[in-house]
Image 1 (cartoon, rainbow, N blue to C red):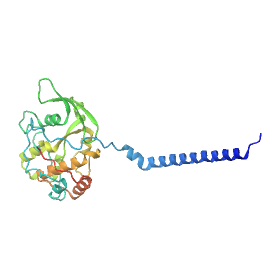
Image 2 (tube, helix red, strand yellow):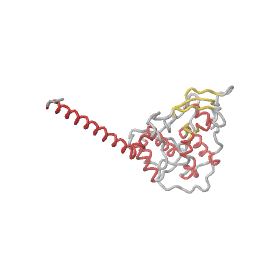
Image 3 (cartoon, rainbow, N blue to C red):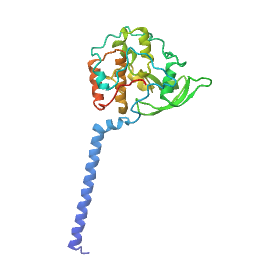
Image 4 (cartoon, rainbow, N blue to C red):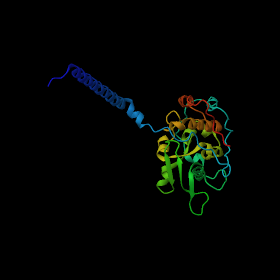
Length: 265
């Protein structure tokens, strides 16, 4: 069988095109594999940037503000940060949680303890235990530290999944000025709604007493509000920041220069 010269050229052209496509695909596959094993696996591991950009402070219809040492300065969070004293962390050898009073008191005298106040404030679809108008039994919320939707159910073990976080950890506060406060002022700091957020239990445990230099929420969409909230609390209770902490806060706020302090209504 004789093949014409035209047919032969056409066949060779198609062959070259096929090989070119295979080479492009091979290069693309190799590039994808290289990307995954260098930067891609870490990018894939990051949580999605979702969730609220902030959380409420209080609902005036049933919550009352706690009296801080001084009012939270209104305006730019970055400007408020520049008013905070900067110095090293004091020793933590004599820290005791009881220095901040009994946990979850009813400091605003609305008839409900602080933990249940914050659960009621932050959760949606709240259900109360039978016969109570305070004790939160269940609810759901867009958890700010992870960006995940979390369901709360009261129980000996299940309650641990949702904890109330001190945005400025009490251990951190103790090392940065709180030991100079009066017992009443420390009690207010521990129960101030500005300093409290319902949060994912494991994330809260991971944070422990860290400041912004050593821990930030994995949900990047929440970091500006989180840092602004820490600055607001430290300004209100005359607490200082370390140089590394201030640098970390400034880096976060550089991405949101319009971020304001968190002021109760």
